[in-house]
Length: 486
Image (cartoon, rainbow, N blue to C red; front, side):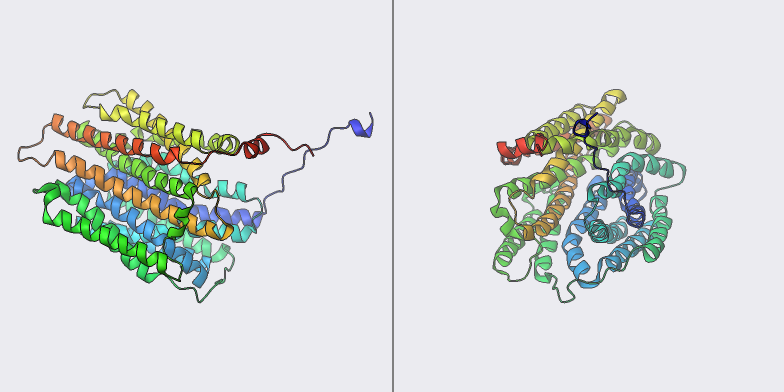
């Protein structure tokens, strides 16, 4: 056989550096605590509310406050990494999450538990972006896809293991143990980080934090969400408390817009990014998908426990199909997006998310568990199929220096969307059950049906920004799909 006829050998994959792989594993261990914690808390909300004599409208702040703190910690993480170095910020985030977990375990009422959940959220909000920064810097950008798949393990396992572990722990012990579990994980991760993570010196010790921007945004979001949560009160939307909170919150948002556009320093959210139609559409999708995912994830375990009377353990097991659905679509959604663009995968993801939520809008006390399990499987597939293309589209058309700002802004919007979603849907349930008469089983089921319809409506609203996503240029699509001729 001639040499020219010999088929060309495929280039071998560059092996992963064991030292870099070790760093990735250390980061994964640290990420397991917040990702498991958030799903375990959802399962325990009913028990926490019963023990602390709190309604859904108050208990939802355990989710809302956590999500708000995560979102508002994102711009702080970028400043802190530049000022103090990634390793120091990563360890600080673990310590904050550890302290928050200990305090949550010893909380004496719902108000103290909400405050300590906010501290947990600050730790988680610092930790997640710092993980990515440390891995990119340590690897020098080599084999980044495979390394990112390693640190993506907690994201895959959290929705599957979290409800199951949370259900077992709360059923056999009590809700305090959800937070005790975090203690050994955080301690081990902190010690491993000290020994195994390389030194990561500051890159800009003089970088300034946008304190004025944060002082405008933080109370603005809190006031808006608090105002929404009070609509279920005696006087409804027309009360002075509701209108005052919403009005002041909107005023602070307007003040931030004026400040951000005129400021010479880097703002917490760079509004100039919205000049890009692709970014604007993606940002709207991030916000609305945060509402669709976090809001419904607050409702679903409460529906199983309050309407169907399921135990905490069984509720945790019933939530597993949603995590499995997310896992099943993760491997191929990205490749499809690369071939055909973002718009069609996003529309399919929205359709699956809506289809997986509709059965809950009709569900009662005796709806088939198999039907609802299949709905959760479809819903999980839809949520994952929605998230990955949107993460791709957000950077389309942006300059290189705008990419870090876009990443920060979308993380904030997704978390804030989740906080709004939890508040809105909890308010719908509370409003339906706010009558003077004791709620019957049919009343409770009807309240949750209404809230799920709201979740569906907000997901349908996301079709508008999805339609505004730019089409993949034909040449670009062909270049992606066709193998190189060289």
